[in-house]
Length: 110
Image (cartoon, rainbow, N blue to C red; front, side):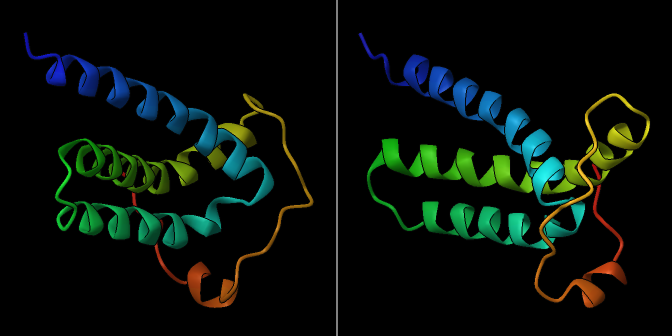
């Protein structure tokens, strides 16, 4: 029997499951203005997966990259949920480099 699909499905579920706390904690400690950096990490991961010859590693890196891209689109929505009081607010967030430029961009959403 070939368990590749089953194991990749389980790995994908775990990676996506780790994406939820990544978004919640990322917005709490960093803020939603870090979204371009998360998206960049995700796009690099997806691009890197195209050049990895090992199937396992290629799939895991690709799914991890897609999770980061999804997470970058969720940061703004998480900030709104925090403003509504659904999650704890942290006023001492770490400011991203080029904050003034990033503030002019619209945050992506799905």
